Length: 613
Ligand code: ADP
Ligand code: ZN
Image (tube, rainbow, N blue to C red; front, side, top):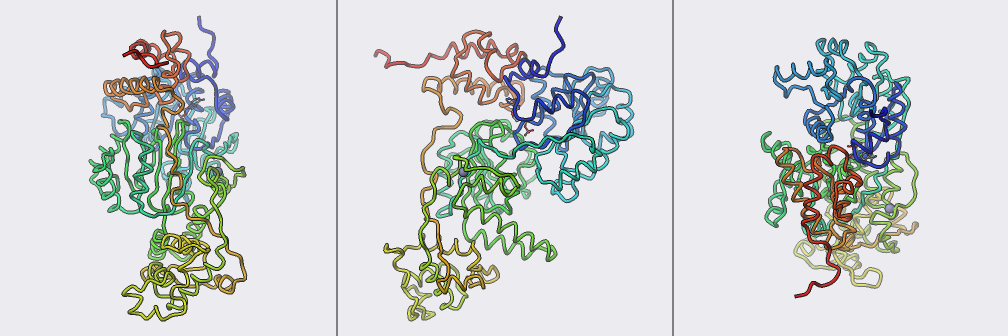
């Protein structure tokens, strides 16, 4: 006879993990004992276990409310792979299929049932709930009740009915949306007044943040992608056209790149998303239409080729990388034109004055982040109200930017803008500063101005176009130069520029680091593996790809990269040894153990020395 399982024994045996993370254990205790909980954890923090384990420990079936049908399928597939009796009830099922699920539910044959909110609230389903044994209600993506948030789902408002009709069944609400306002709304609208709150840090320590200035964005991206060959990632672009062009050009360079944006036919979008989820190493080039509900754990990088709208947006988008806790990269290239484009976008929107002000303020906060000379993570977390110290895993920590005294350069730039009449863009102003007699310069007589050529030297070195662009960009971000989006990016002086022009403030500028983040890195997934083990890792990946095809599930549902890496490093020769590896639970061992051990034993062991010829 088995003793009653404990949370930890289930974690070890069913999920194959050695220990709980963060608040998981406390949340599980609370809910298992029948209490309500409100759980705030960042993406990838491990929210699912917080309701899955209590559902297994308590009598009856756990009912999970989830807003996206596409998500339910993969989650259920992953649970089934662990040997858990889970299924879903949503509009993708036929009548007879749904009926079968209902019967299984009533008969107590299910451990977890995923339901869409609109289905849950039908009289028919509420009546089923009265007759079935329910272990708990889990409300995933609970921020969908917030009418101010961008994911608002009116059906979520009806979920307070659960508390009214089933006051004795514990409820757990989970979200990755942090701010206090949303938290308050969740409590009120879901009637979770008695819920204990578990708030985790929103740091994602495994994500490395790098932000570079655009020089030749496509080339910079290709260089970045070299370090991520064969890995899955997302490249965000600002427009549909750019998505199409870039996806085509990456594909021509040999990358497995696919486009995704709202202008593509539904069928193409579905197919591309499916390939991204199921195949290894697809690069999705997309607008922000792509991402909501993508919980693929092994996305290794998120690149932004245009400036995001806000820090919230940036954090949410980059948060799609590295959900499995393995090293991942968030990389952004931005330029002054992005700023002008966004300002124009805000101004031209139909929104009221207040919305526009908020839009500009959010953009300003983001610009503060991209121009920061100190730790990016401190700035990001600080924006969300969380204090932290320098992280050691962002570009500014790894390679602190050099600052230089740009007081004179700033004055020269402002003079050049002023003397040329505040009606030209950065390109022309820089030509004047450098003393280039271009056609446009001579046509306007700007070669006759006193400012012509005053910037030919910068700090005793020959000035150049790139360095001046960086100066102007930094001045624009600090609000000394305004970019007039109605006049093709013409630069203007602002009120705030006066003291700078008069030389009353010292201006420290960042050195333009042309090759930031250049250091070549090993492929993330095999980091730390010896060479012979890398070969085994590749074989294991091949085996996983085949197995995933046969089971018709995404590869990560079979086993995670981290687990494959542990196997490749440990080379278990027996089932018992394999069972010791994190990520291998009892069901996986039973299902795949023999095959995996065969792959391991067939792969020649690491080469200690050169083999004889
Ligand atoms: P969230 O829903 O918070 O984004 P998930 O529940 O999808 O996160 O978990 C993220 C990943 O972390 C999953 O791959 C999951 O298997 C893994 N994970 C969760 N808890 C643990 C743990 N205690 N030990 C190891 N891995 C874990
Ligand atoms: Zn840092």
